Length: 233
Image (cartoon, rainbow, N blue to C red; front, side, top):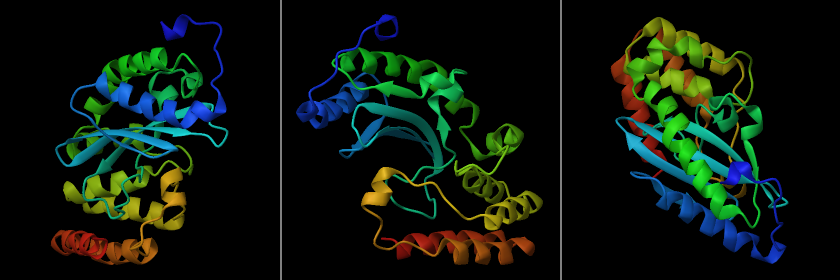
């Protein structure tokens, strides 16, 4: 068992890319109902539940020997259409109530690590995803999700969509104000290295939604979301 190991054997640097790819495929084989998207620096294992994409992101640091694991819950029609965009980012360690369990060494024991992480996904992460698997649940439990500070966790984006889909005018205006007060967004390594060619003007889009939200015009808000998707195709 990986968690019982006390000594790790370092990988040869020339083997890291191949092992990282095999690690992602092995992890996927230990899960049911997920698909994988992978680059040389990011593994994304995801599934669609209703109108939401639930995903586990494993990002490799520049040195290649450390993996950082986070979860994402993203609306399937999110206004940013990059495959590796993360929304409502929560480190695995936070879900496990052990912040040291967010980063993991990529070593010769990578297969045991895949087994360990699959077990965590099937238990702790599954329970977390179940808690927020619909927009109604997200609104009901919004106090647990709202950022305690303005860290780069992209949580207001999910709350904005939840307010739209539950047609909650007051919450939508509140979350749009919060987001527009600081529009900095955390991006994945893949987004940084290979950005979307049709990237939208996020501030202009959210400002337009804010104008419509003040009147509670949810039909026009949904039309804007559809339109932004067509631009990015």
